[in-house]
Length: 233
Image 1 (cartoon, one colour):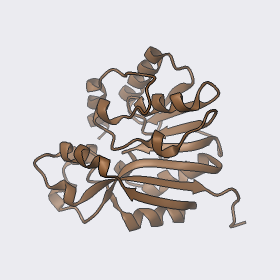
Image 2 (cartoon, helix red, strand yellow; image 1 turned 90 degrees about the vertical axis):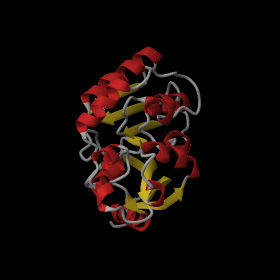
Image 3 (cartoon, helix red, strand yellow; image 1 turned 90 degrees about the horizontal axis):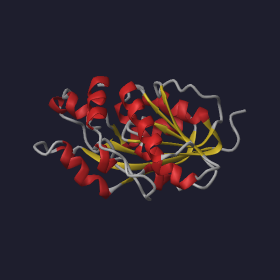
């Protein structure tokens, strides 16, 4: 999977900066929505992007948070990190930076960010609950999770689950709606909402045009909040 994304980095197109909303989808083919719009970003906020890829969603977030804000992208693939840094330099956006790391183990202190976002990445992780736990840990109290991702509508046939091309197309790792909601709540998030996004249908169809994948998965907008106080204490 790491090699597949390294190859995708080599194919990614140049970024067009400064427009809103700017999403990952039309540039790299690796996104399924617009988490920057979903997050409702405000000037001055600090934003973390999990699986930032070529950096397009980070640059879109920078438009919203402005000079007083900060945007950090995390990606496991060195080729993607290098490409994203180049895009940020070309766009002359100094508030954006990129770090190579695993999103299951984030290299940031607790309560560092106002928003954690992600675009079609968390479904690729084997331990999704650990990713959500890390996202919650680095969020400030009252901070927001905003994720555009793929969810399962029905069990995937084995031939789809075993196809690595469908893994890198954000398909085979999808979790069901009930399981995903339970996972977020067990992690400690509140105000969990998962809404199927019709806008992602054409993107999904383009990933596997000869396979009936639209019967099994859908693009979804996922939001949740880290409560202001830890009520378990």
